[in-house]
Length: 96
Image (cartoon, rainbow, N blue to C red; front, side):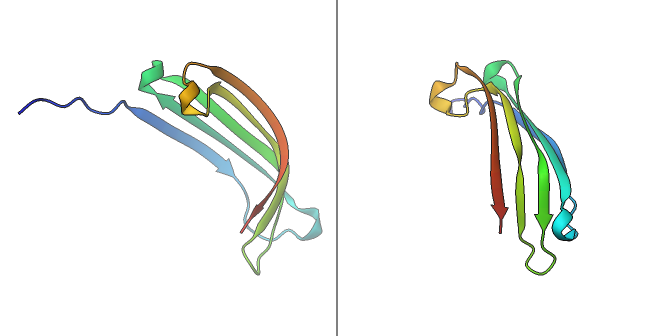
């Protein structure tokens, strides 16, 4: 029987601050950061962060958020694996 090489290692980790209690019209802040290390890139990091303001609903559990996001690392489209990207965006998210 031949030996089979294992898949490349990867590690993903992060932290989030997003209170889930309803805050009425004034809302509450949220923040999140995520890191992704991949062996095929010598464990060079991808980092993504989100920050903004949210309005959670205690009745439905739904949340509407507005904020910004930042990404720095290897291309999110894996077919362009050798490209480095730095992205910044703003948006509105609806979690349901």
